[in-house]
Length: 262
Ligand SMILES: [Fe+2]
Image (cartoon, rainbow, N blue to C red):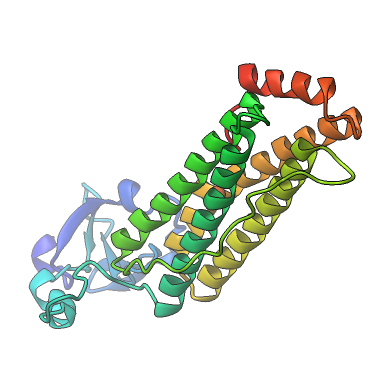
């Protein structure tokens, strides 16, 4: 029976390949029932041996010809030095947007580091806030590094940019320094979230599904959790009011014992 098969190729059991197809989907060709196999990106033909074939074998007329098909890709492999070999479907726009986000993460880290230095001063001495902002600074730097790793993974080039000098004083005439700093931190987290959403939007517009997935899975969920945490700290410090004494000290002790970076 199979000697007359007009589609000599791989042989599969019908039950394995297309158990859900109705008999009407098949056409008879040279005694074989033929159906276009619906698998995405295959587009080939499935051949079901005629009813005389007792073993119900199928032939899939999709032959992967690696040495033919690879020729196009081979011609596109860069031969010049200083050019990524791994880069594929990664546009310049996404590369630039990742570098911008690296700068955002570093800048937020820089501000938090300045807050750490302020609260660690001998005449401020709020050790819980100092620790919290130091941890937060490290975490934002980790975010920058994660983006740098990703940039290299996709074959882009990391280009670090300038950062503005952050504030060094956080006292405020109408509120405690702790509340003032925490409100700045909350605003920074929200701004960072906007920047991440913009990066995700650019990736989506460029049909870069890998970058979309990376931003969503590695950044966006954590970001909303950071905003929630900072919001709670601002709310708690507002309850303390303008008092820059015992209430703030109590909050600071709580952070020292239970707080971690945002
Ligand atoms: Fe971050």
